[in-house]
Image (cartoon, rainbow, N blue to C red; front, side, top):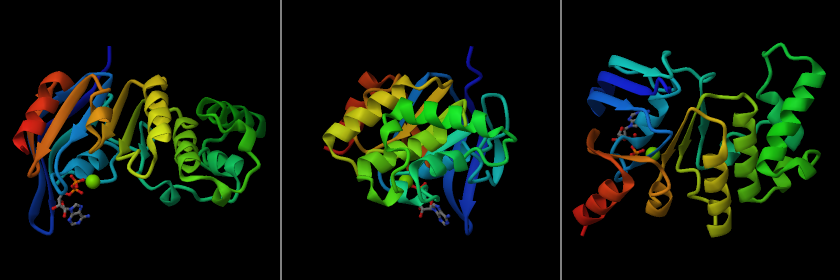
Amino acid sequence: MTLGIKLEDVAVEFDGHIALSVTELNLSAKSIAVIGSNGSGKSTFARLLNGLVKPTRGAVTVSGVNPDTKTTGFLFSNPDLQIVMPTVFEDVAYSLTNQKLSKDEVRTRVESALTAVGLIELQEANCHTLSSGQKQLLALASNIVREPKVLVADEPTTLLDLPNTKRITKLLHSLPLEQLVIVTHDLDLAATADEVIWFDAGQVKQVGKPATVIPAYRKHFE
Ligand SMILES: Nc1ncnc2c1ncn2[C@@H]1O[C@H](COP(=O)(O)OP(=O)(O)O)[C@@H](O)[C@H]1O
Ligand SMILES: [Mg+2]
């Protein structure tokens, strides 16, 4: 049983302006898509889930704990923001810094993460020589090597072409996670989730099955 994502009486304010306000939310589906217009609070919600944003008021729990970067991995749209080391292998290994693992354990975990995303052949490559699709796969490997329970991806396919979007979508759904949260404007991608949450002006407008929420969302903007 998954403990899920729970928000209780949560508000997030920036400079006195309420960016997000949620009375009660319980998400227990395996995969969740987050949709809504620009500025509706999607990224604020996503960042609450790994503790990057702290609630001004209320309580958030993810898999039964206060959000932190150990429980929740995070994938940005722009992988350049997540690449910190010169080579592919080093970049993924860097994510294991401070985990007190032996060199052999690090190698095994990095190789397994790179194999999972299909980048093992490029482990010695310079990160800057990778295509944007490959960079996003690298950022994904750097996340999964830490074995998070939950992965939040904030518009992970925005910079990708159709084949790479399909590849990342398939990979995200195949990861051994308790929950996957995908923030996206791509309604085809949103439709791959078990549950969809629609944010509007910092509030939850609707939560439900993709077959219910996505047509309602489209209709709202007709
Ligand atoms: N760090 C921040 N400082 C000030 N305002 C912010 C910050 N992050 C988000 N906001 C504001 O909060 C609102 C929601 O933003 P965001 O969650 O990024 O929306 P979305 O991801 O749906 O486009 C917007 O009005 C945005 O300007
Ligand atoms: Mg955003």
